[in-house]
Image (cartoon, rainbow, N blue to C red; front, side, top):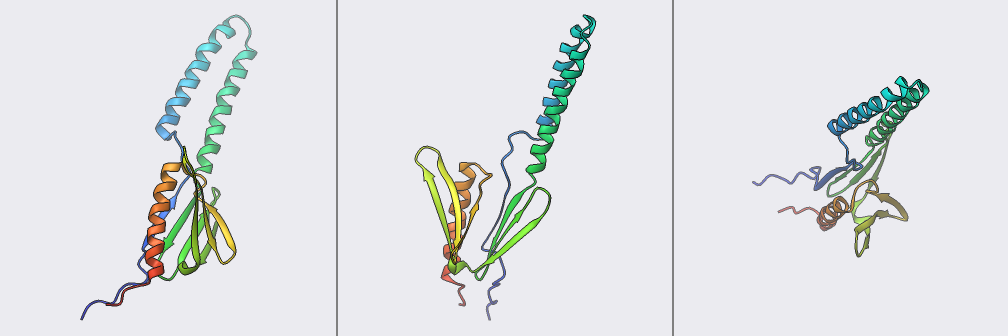
Length: 165
């Protein structure tokens, strides 16, 4: 006798994280370059007796450091999607770790995709029973297109229902 299908197995599962072009190694390199340039520029001013300039150049380095730390902190935010035959679970996790979750019936879910002729997908929106959620706003057009294609195919399968034989 064949195994019964696992209805809780995901048809689609993905996590979308905001795009960041600078990783930790690049950040260290940038900070070393900025710190080195600031130090090299500070020495002549210090030797000329214009020592307050050294402090302002140091503040510039600190401002760049804190701006990038805030940027990396905001990159911890994400959206998680899990689709089975009977349920779509959509969760948003903020940069601070607060989680908000919605459970939707796949038969009632519609994915709206707004494309630009030159730039590709610009906006993805989930609609279900009069409510809507804008999704994937932190990712680039290529990732949006990949996500939208895979999600739409999986949603179509979920709407078709499980096969019992």
